[in-house]
Image (cartoon, rainbow over all chains, first blue to last red; front, side):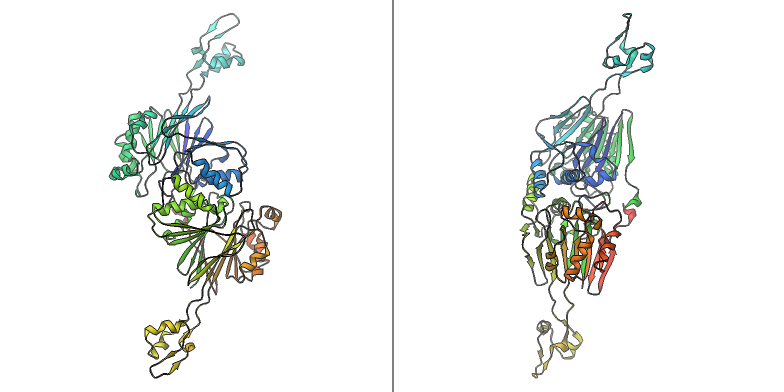
Length: 320
Length: 320
């Protein structure tokens, strides 16, 4: 079990020769969720060796270009690659028009059904609710309508101890009920207590994405006790005034949200290009909230209850 | 003197992990012209070490995504970088709406004036006419409204032989007329013939861009005797039926246009991803028109009357 988060882009504003703007791929319970889609995201998906076609849900936080200029290209590539599976896109009201205008201009209609779900930026909102997970949006405080997204696994059924079940001669057709927590009664009317047959399932994990936003105490309320919080930190404290003016956060402010939310881990990113050395962000945040990581592009962050494992997905440098 | 053409992207349809879709930068008489702008063009401009801000004219051939999905990102970066110089964009009618809708959604207006000039796809059209050059569009034959672009230097003034002028005691203020071809008369009324004072200027050069299009005899008429013709060759002859169906060209067809136009040199590109080996395109075209080059990304093609010089602009591989 565990969640995998792949950072496809962690820069703010404009891509540079070797940095990409915001995009992340979350793998939760075998499902692939794309969060934001800056220019070049499809290239980063390829470089991370992600199987494109498994993405069925795309979440766009807001309509600043560094968070969605790569979307139309990705949707177009899905079409050119012959996708047929439905795709749902969650984002601000005007996103649908922006995308469809471009498809219409190309005289193209997609080979797959494309659904748009409009996010509300003033109240939290449940976007997807299945047996396996819930995804909701929550308001952020930025220059234009912006939402964060909260991904929560739902509890799994109890874990059956198959050896004990076999010892009692329990038939497979009864496993279903036992995993739901029921006791089991044999043909002689003897009841076997459920806690002898099962153990607690792994605890559900959760991930919250908060970019772009200035510091607001509300964010911590929306993401209370989340296992992993991604919070933008465009600036360090030396540019606190600039952060406020552009409605962004500093690394220390991101860490403050993580602390107030009692989050388990914090991932920061959306760095301003003015900082060549990204370690400054991490140092600054660590002083407020120790369990912090600075997002690096084409790295996978594997979240388990025991902690975070980081792995590079970057192609070998000599691949060009 | 000479023209420089930098290939920023030469792939068709979708970008891959290490290939970009169509974009080219033409440097003519100290002016920078961007031709098409596939996703990631701004990244390629940076990687080619091009000074962005010198681009004042952008030409978009048609509204298939692989030719313009990088435009809004580039325009947005111009704004974020504080550009103030006017920018003119030449392209199909709907382009303006596509771009402005996205700026409006971001609540942003550009820091610089942006002008849109609508191209006609049924007749040739002069788009820019200055003392130094003429730029016109011409119809191509594709699935949607598509134009090519023809860039022609205008003749320079005659080249003054300064040593001879000095020997005659000609004042600097008279150079202007002499370069225009006038004879010079000294204070004693003696006339010095212009051909003793000047020599012919370098002959003007021209460049034509034709992508995307199926073969049509008209193209050769529009680009007659051009010094360098870029003509798409999405396929080789093995996919001639597919080329016709999608209204694209084969390498042999591109070469046929070059031959019929009596072009000096041909550059081919817009390769379908199904061909791993690009040398096949070059071989096929060569059989029809010998002076052919297969476009390679981040290479500069320097056109002079004596021929073409090719130079790699790619960053060192260990730069990532």
